[in-house]
Length: 441
Length: 129
Ligand SMILES: C[S@@+](CC[C@H](N)C(=O)[O-])C[C@H]1O[C@@H](n2cnc3c(N)ncnc32)[C@H](O)[C@@H]1O
Ligand SMILES: [Zn+2]
Image 1: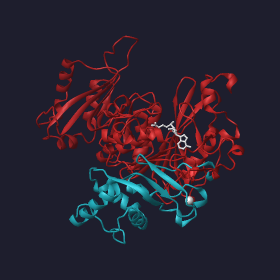
Image 2: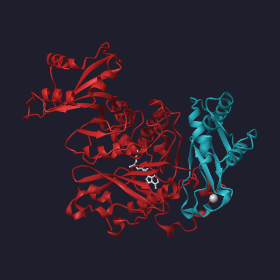
Image 3: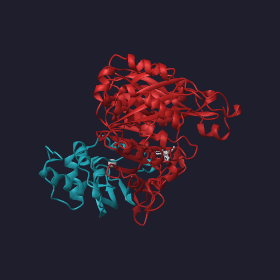
Image 4: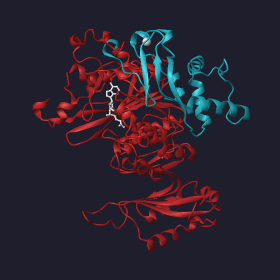
């Protein structure tokens, strides 16, 4: 199989593998990333074709680009030697002999100045490309990729420690500026709960959102995951218990206008006011991916419909106003009561196990205090296989992207468990506001 | 609320889960608007697969439209001209028809839900949770 060099961004290195594996799996592409080293933004992989390389990189948020590898070395001499000695170099040269082309340079933590670049390009003259050099839209871009190590604070690296030479196959959507496009600062309707653009896009990649597939966010808020899902062609539908957050700020500043802003409104399904635990979707409505950030009570309450004090509420269903049952009137406000996060997560897993097709994914974020986290706090469901547990660390707490795949009951049987519940873990919110002090445990 | 969405929702009350009457809801006193939106034939094709056609007919009737064919359009191919016409009609009905205000009533338990500011509200009073 041909070899390809992947160049990653220096962002969320522990999420890289999950993102690319998920995309590869979505497109039915074999990829082995088991040798990936989080401290290194480069990796060489085997892939079946350029087409496979294109598919996994074009949607990637954490990758920067992928290159067909022609050779590598510690310095320029070694690089040239390696290219010249490679078995298929003659075939490669012939393939690209007549097309238009240009050379490009990619440097990690360092770069060459223009004059040196020109000399370096000259040194590749043995490749004898005869096509026209075209700076805009050439048929092929040949790239010198270099890795530098900065010798100390404020210093500049002079020469790289590793070099690669390859043909550019695909730049990622990150390199094409998707993060600017979805930046919350530029988004019309946002709120305190809006999820950052980069990780919401990554969540949708790992959740295998795909064209024509329905994506559900049961805790929609301002709709961050919905717009991210539509970017990848998913058909988003969302619900939230709070009608005000769904309605937005005005007719020009709400969830549907965000879709208009991104020109994906023709993919948007709808939003509904709904308590997730009293769900109104018909049971045979197929949901292909569920991607969300459940309420954990820091910026928004975790509530469900119901009376806080059931004894006091007895008989309220018989109250009549102007000849109508009060609870059937349009202006009736349904009371809410507090609910435990652990129960809500159980409900989320149960719902996912019932609604996702085999192979469908649930991806959600769960906050944990670092001093009392134990693996068994991660909820498990017998028909959902936990495939990723990816941690984003903050000062005293973390949040984890937990990703599950719905499995066929005849082939997979896991164990249903919920360590949060059995360990009586206190509300995350209490600990958050007490600064995660010992006393608050 | 898009007309399309009426095809996905039933009564939220758990005791209605097993009732065939809880889907689709009955739409009454609805204020409709036609909101122009870009035509996306693939989108309609994806949705066709997921639609419960009898429910489409029933809700359309609630809203005063009795002109739908009795069976779900089949063999739709977005590049064929006669398919295009069908898809456009479906686009007008499913995507562009919006319920701005109105009632959704469960035919099983008679609970009333409301659509407010184009968003359907399925929150339940305590005694029905
Ligand atoms: C962490 S926020 C998610 C925010 C969202 N990702 C965004 O982009 O704004 C959690 C949301 O869950 C909602 N919520 C709380 N309890 C709920 C429930 N029982 N059912 C549905 N939504 C609920 C809150 O109103 C809040 O908007
Ligand atoms: Zn009902």
